[in-house]
Image 1 (tube, helix red, strand yellow):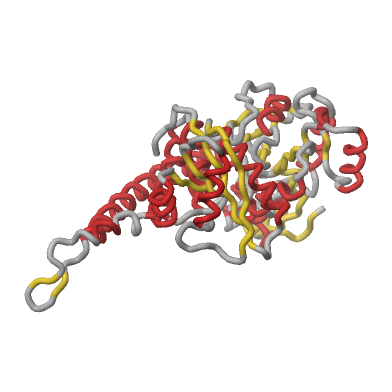
Image 2 (cartoon, rainbow, N blue to C red):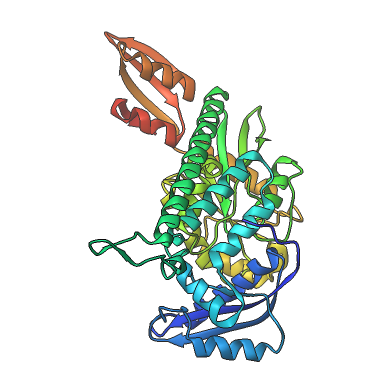
Length: 424
């Protein structure tokens, strides 16, 4: 996907079906504006069409699109739709109105492309681009089918369409590249797993997750003293960054900052960033960071939960952290405390309540960690696993069984469930 250096002008388009909530669509369009800004695209106008169903040729009605372009009163380079477009819809719009048409997903991909710094991030972005392009190939070359040389030959046998041939060649090329990238990313994920196994057994892992621009990187810096890039932009962080956090009494934990989530994040984007999100999947505790100053923070909490469920991290213990309390009134802080009594409210920017958050992290990591296990002596893998991932408090032999009282993470104990006879 090309990098766009020129500052482009765009009109934002949205379709809100009659059965859908217009306020939610307004919020989504505002977010689209922020996405466009992050992609260095200037918004010249923003319009929503209410209709009973999607118009198949151009998504929004042709008359509506024409009227919006006229209302803008200036030449624009691009139309950005808040909804996913098919390849044929984008080309129909471009043919009818002589302006490029893209959708929300492509804007996100352009941002990812600009922000990818490491080899891992670049591979993940390229994989996401390929998976976005693949289903759009079929309608890409249909114009060639109208230019077939000789429609029939001999006994009425028609040539296979040139467009179909070209589409098939491109599909095979993309699938080969997807296979190679997935193979490379699988090696990276394996390396991540190996590195985790080499960490000290008493070193717990914390993953920072949350809606994009919630202040995760600022909180990460505040907790660990790291110097991670902090920008007031969506998706400023694409690579997972890991640092050590000392909780006192010689207890260190590993903290990882991850890519931000967003509403309606396409499945293929989540799948492509599996290597980065691996840090969240493998965490003992997730800090779900939420921007308290965002009027839509409740929906953002739900959106994060949806992605966590999709990557299989929804059962990992969570601590909800409301960030940016320096931006809201005392009354808002009190209201959120009443609604979310177990949450932590902090300002990563000013450092307010950060020490209290550290204490709460320590408390959560220690919670429900004591187990009594009965493991047959012949099950050496289970015994070795217990020693590696747990802290042995007591150990005694009862015949051919080893009885161990152990402190262990909630996630790790799942592998030993068959041996657990009691937990504290």
